Length: 221
Ligand code: ADP
Ligand code: ADP
Image 1: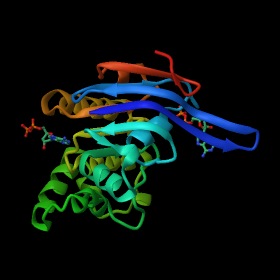
Image 2: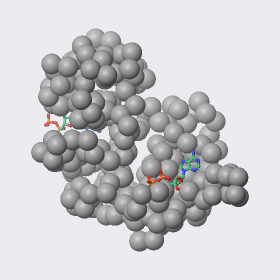
Image 3: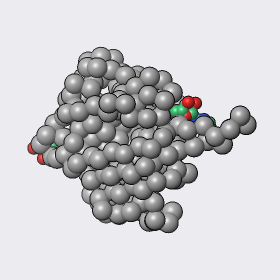
Image 4: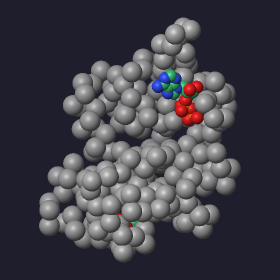
């Protein structure tokens, strides 16, 4: 599903080039559940954002579902992203001037899901994440944990083949966190959804099938 070849991400800083990622080679099969671990600043988020097609200022080769991302223009990357990827952001990235309901509708509108089908899909998601009572509220009226649940729900509504999650349980109570990890595991095992998560938690990583460890922008294990 994913193949990275010699990917580098360099920030041109005053003191000279800084390698946030150096010579990354990584293959992720369909149906994998991979955890990216490593110390703070080791490049985990940078790697996840490259995989999620949020960053294009890297060099090397990236094949996603057979498509050479490094050769695609902005429009094609965007289409690929919206069609196949659900991204859970560490900082939620909800749209502040849209309600919870409207935030959950966004991925469906990108997928051209007919208006008449959207309501039942959004209502199912609200129900599953226990946020039905919050549907008409705006993100700034929610707690951090509730915003995180909305962020996870939004990543899943369009049934992506690939879920990328940056510390998906970081702001949740441990029982809510476990519920999210169990849901990920179920989607992975029963629906074949490929999952890549960045996590500091050994417990979260134990839901996955393998770990890639980064240090100083390199894969060390
Ligand atoms: P992690 O997710 O493992 O904590 P990041 O991927 O966020 O690490 O960051 C990797 C490295 O890249 C860090 O040293 C960070 O300071 C650096 N970095 C991230 N964004 C920028 C930026 N916009 N400009 C310069 N350096 C950056
Ligand atoms: P059910 O639980 O109704 O028997 P499934 O076992 O097929 O249904 O799927 C479990 C749940 O996961 C369903 O609600 C389904 O809509 C949802 N689902 C299936 N594939 C994905 C996906 N790729 N991303 C998010 N949700 C999905």
